[in-house]
Image (tube, rainbow, N blue to C red; front, side, top):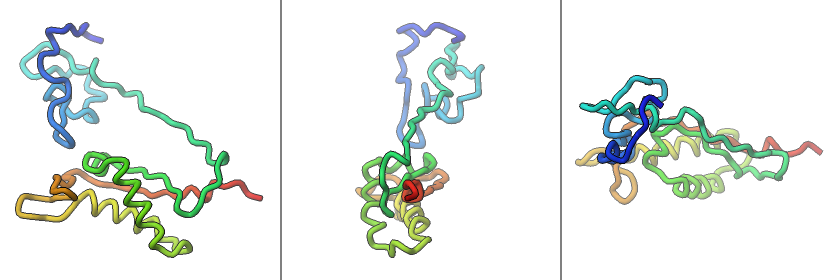
Length: 156
């Protein structure tokens, strides 16, 4: 780190705002700051870099360890989805959507992804884009992949 952060440096909340508007020390979005080594908090000598990590969280899932059905999927999406929908909301949406599709339809996963995009964007109302419970919809780019895990089953 360029500077050892002391308690007096932390008067302002580290993360200010929420969703797409969240900023590290009210200066920069976390995803924008991974390479900006010289960025300082506005009107200060505090470098932001010590508050960011470019080390991703990685989890390994052994596909061959489990038998998967046609409704077992992995959701890969950009922050445009995750900023406005909780993991549980996404899981519930996909869990409710896929059984209503023909299991032999190769487009069912694309349709599920489109459904998630529409849920995250919401509907245009007089106060902007809104999702369930009148929460703000995503104003960010939204890309979603619904990846079936059934193809990872062991071949007999």
